[in-house]
Image (cartoon, rainbow, N blue to C red; front, side, top):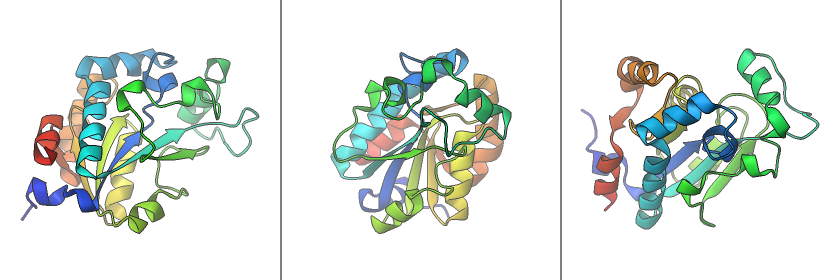
Length: 207
């Protein structure tokens, strides 16, 4: 029987994990206009920010998982079309320490938040410290927000489930391109792996 939402996302064992909510991805410096426009269309940045704020107020953890590159691209590999395109973004938009690598202002990043940067791969769990940090904090439920349902969110959800976490996905705090495709994946794939809720549901439970 599914857990009640309040039990599932009890703050003492829950972390919000944001996926690539960065200025050069879906913010004011976006180099992926289709993704940025889709995010705005569904209200994803604002909803992700609301969830992060409510999580902090309830003492749940907030972890930002960001994609970055060294200026010389060492340690990164273009072994698929998506990574090759990311490494060629104009003006080195996602270079470590650059403005584009910063999180979008809607998240209102706080000193209590954790930030994990990766220079390789497409998903935040593989070969990073994310899993160990979550376990060290007693986290058993992961709330996935951000982009994109096409690859990043799907990979985050699959990895988290494989690692034994309960996963919650707020349907209005994630986005795919095109939007209709993302909605289909939510209904036919992610809905089989995670508990799908709305941002209002989470904010109300933590309120």
